[in-house]
Length: 298
Image 1 (cartoon, rainbow, N blue to C red):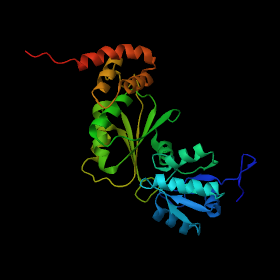
Image 2 (image 1 turned 30 degrees about the vertical axis):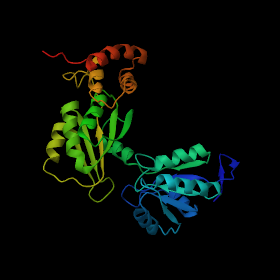
Image 3 (image 1 turned 180 degrees about the horizontal axis):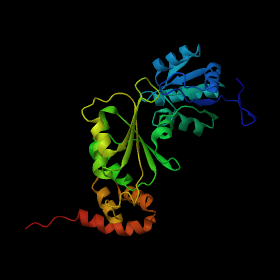
Image 4 (image 1 turned 180 degrees about the vertical axis):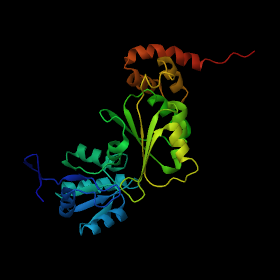
């Protein structure tokens, strides 16, 4: 495999970020197969899944594990191999590495080292779900996993309540019911949601509709598999009965979380409303003082 990147001959190897199937093993590009055959080493989040994929396509490249629990020490080892001129392919257990998985840590370290990184694009659960959701695709945002704890999840949804773009989440099947219930309470029962489950697999399922209807369809079901959850953005015309909270209301809501500092609160509200941070500080400081003031006793 040639070790040239953007026309320059390099002493170090290249890290190839290779997208792999999210379910159906046929969903892999010809280029990805070639790269996986030609690199010196494959760093895989789940070696068992990757071996199955490689076996299907008669690829015999060596594999090493790279996952959440060994990412720091393994990153050092992989960077050393890249410095030695070895080419390494990074794969996740499904989809595109670095998207809500430990691959980001390696990519960040490699970029800081000045080692070339080359994308080999392909499947992505977020984009696959968006393509069939029937929601606006001209503007969208990827929010990854919602917080696992109820309080954190509800705070995050409160911040996103007036997000106008289509929102894409990953969600655990065991938390799906709770997430949908919180969305109904905070976003409104008529907000459109799409639950895309087990995309490209045998038991693929896509459920669309207002939150109230989707929750009804999911009630009393044991949900299994990978979940991608899409939610329509806030629309003043559709949600006019649930007006956007005021700036002061947003500040007070975020201040209920004692782990958030003033800087984080102001930054979040500034992003939502497009208001300069210096003006928000002036509004937030008396609210904080009011909140921190000792209660008067009779």
